[in-house]
Length: 294
Image (cartoon, rainbow, N blue to C red):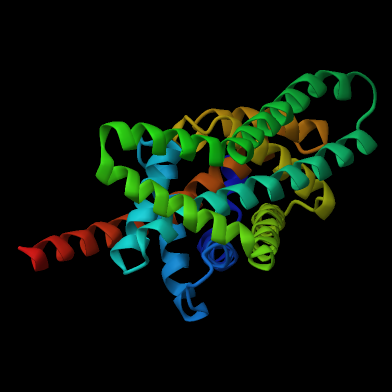
């Protein structure tokens, strides 16, 4: 495993990190298109917000919720109206989960076509259980958005009238966002491209490690790993879950467990190499903002 990880060298690692940064262009584009009214020239801001959001979720003990809070705060701090910030976050998360579901179904179909006998039977409960959980979470997010906002508005009108006005504004902005079907469709496509591009990064890593593995099989493996990470959203960085998933899923497709675990470790190193500088820069910007106000 150590030899496989060392095999890519610094040059390979830097190339992979740069490729991974490129994936954030797609993810930032998905968030921007889910915010109708924002100029395309602000793509850099949305890429930055998504990068910080991911760094917090992967490296800090706040799980995905902390990443979302910091990402939305970053947009708001740069002049994006708060109703648009929150509405775009909800729409982006919805299209992200919908595209992930499609990607997961591709992984399941590939697994079904490749795996037979006892190995397929051993993996089936884990994969289908994770997929069912993902579908359930997505259904809650999609179907519960407007009812939860309506409930929050009623409670706020009774307890915090000023807050109710803010929630009403988010609800209205969300309605306008979903009314822009072209934007929602484009956000879905950007997120789907992001899932595929992120999975393709694992194939690049394997090639850098000297492992020649079918591209479609790598996409299938990664789609299932992403499903496990999404189900374990409450755990920061899905620590432990990702590694266990690689060890379990990889051999089912013929990828040795040692190589699969090395792949997971290299992806963790990528998270640190990209996420840590982003967090340091974010903290520096926050400190400068505080000092400027003082």
